[in-house]
Length: 371
Image 1 (cartoon, rainbow, N blue to C red):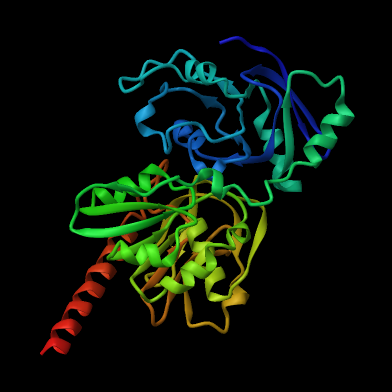
Image 2 (image 1 turned 135 degrees about the horizontal axis):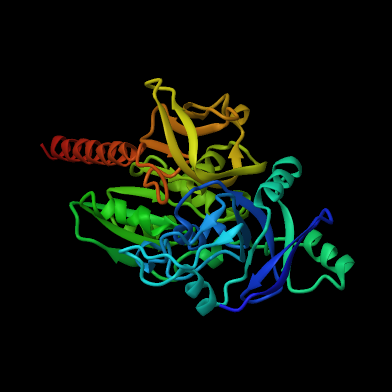
């Protein structure tokens, strides 16, 4: 891969110099991820659509690149910022070197950056617009470009969602996954638990979802501000109580909005595979994988029949919700954990048990009415 001089220019005027490969300029929201592994999953996670991702772990590329673990069929980040690229890996599962993948796909990557210093800037001032460029001769204009970064008016979900209905697996339970930018690990986790997964676009109507006759419904993760998915809120409300529902990450936030709650943007979000959360039902602590920049405002749920089930131990934010009467549960983190620890995978089993119990109850009611 060919390296040239490159720069990251932030909207506050800060400039970081390094070595650039791939296309430039690249403009997006600059965020950081604290995971020690999983760079192939991170760059292909649809939740990063529109973002320049800073990897805080200093050595990237240690175990090469494997397309089989990607979370989508292509990279989703606007750009990548790292300390050091190890392009001499020799892992037994690697398909190719990570640097070769970056070069083949012309993915903007800035290396040789003091990512500790850059992360401190983001932690202090919050996520902000940035530009990866090969020249700073026009620095004032670059700062203006970075400051002017905004997502598209309709948000990023419409870019990240699937375009048509897709069926995966042949399991006992039929689960409709509303795709707001779903990670492959979520659908794989369901298929591996004996589910038939029907993936539908984010704009699918409640009537069409009901025609698919699901046993349960999953609202997936996805990029951007949940408020941009205003078209999905009425659909979610129609489906509440129809079948058991699980929301993951953005899906968690959308469930809260459908209940009448509120969300807000965080200073720098939670992005990493080491976020500690407490299960308020059992008192146990779990280490979770997370990727989000918005949160549910707990006070907005105070008058609703909703229970907070998980809480983040770093900042106290809401990490899980459950309706007190309807079969609806949600988590802000990723129970399928890719990349990350498998501590919270049991939540997938909890949801599917909820689905089975609901289906059994429906059948008993049908038999009772028939009798």
